[in-house]
Image (cartoon, rainbow, N blue to C red; front, side, top):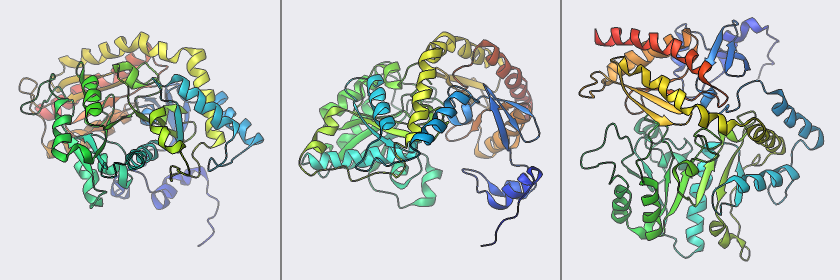
Length: 458
């Protein structure tokens, strides 16, 4: 391997195109001459690219920089920890920061979710939870309980286990055959209910699927409080409470996948609190450190831990960096910011302002639905608002990738124009945002959506 020469900053584009393999990206687009957006600095709700251009970060990077960019105090907590203990593993050992953080998370988590298993991120958390529920049932004498029930269009990660739960066809097909046992039921897209379902009976699909598979084969149900993929699907009244009842009836564990929905995104520490249900396991990451360091966790109930406390049993699973002391120190500093600066209170105080701004866009013909909770909202784009007719695949490609993504970015707004399901724009601003920031979002979003309407409906 050749030793790379030193390169000035002006070579970043060439170096990125030659060496950096971007995630979830069409690399051929950059070979055709398009620039790779290179973000070099962040402060508060804004970031700057290599050319000095300023953008409003309306996606909190990827639903995760919850306290905003540029918090040197939070970053310094990691540096201070490195001076004391840069790393030691949680494999048969412990260190103070992991212990303190586990206790702090347990104190914030709902009910008896008192056991914290650290990971390096969200996908690892989901993968860990899937393995955990399988081993739990085996230890309890039910080895056939292996299947996972998730919802259609839901995203739970891309590792082979998590991908079996993910309900997005084009993410699954390239890697088939997948881990067996992934089963899917309708999601809670109330704007497009499947035939035969209403808000009042959507949860019954879960029981129907459990009965179809055989209750003695189903290990767990996994659901996000607000489903990300498809565009911020919220639950109808009583939905999660009924899912909890169904799980209890059939000895099925309930995993609340809160990689996005925890740590203030919905105005509470955990999405389960927002919607009033008690899971057996919560998977989390992203906002735990506001992504100043990579960290995730599986938070399990005392009942889940019980069979692992007997004899020589262990959860035969782990990651080198799970519970990394620097990451744990950053997480502790991040949670200090939440408490000291009223981050949850800010979301609750201004959620209505955020939603009102988005609802004001309903006068634009292309805007079909606005939905979400907290600082996690989506706009579904339609061809015909009266009939709710969506755009076909070619039209969605033209709308989202041929116009909206580049136009919004060019005008200074980072958000997600997505078609995992029907075409949507998702917005998930830093939790420090308020009315002034919402006005800034609208100043870009309204004219671009109006231009998109003329382009698509002319």
